[in-house]
Length: 112
Image 1 (cartoon, rainbow, N blue to C red):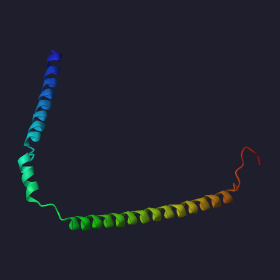
Image 2 (image 1 turned 90 degrees about the vertical axis):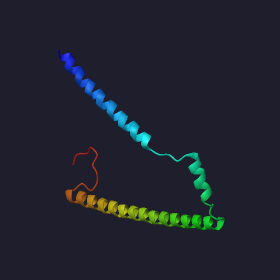
Image 3 (image 1 turned 180 degrees about the horizontal axis):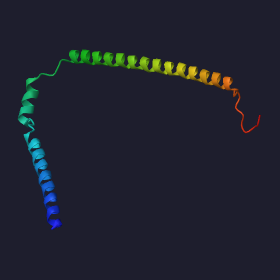
Image 4 (image 1 turned 180 degrees about the vertical axis):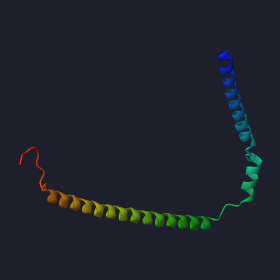
């Protein structure tokens, strides 16, 4: 009765899957979402910030973003310059190696 033992294995796998689904369902049920009354209460308790404060906050945020953008741009340009100098050095090294080996000009199919 090999089919019987196979069924018990698949049954235990099914049981494990069902247990995992129950655990996941319980975790989802444990999540507490605020009720609409709680949301209204929290909105009513906090007065909206005055427009001057909001303007200052936005200006500060924009200045921070601009500063970070400039820093990132200069970093990228620095890396591009560094890569360019590395490529120049590599080309020079390849040219020197070709000169040393006597292959200063590529010979396409010509003998000699």
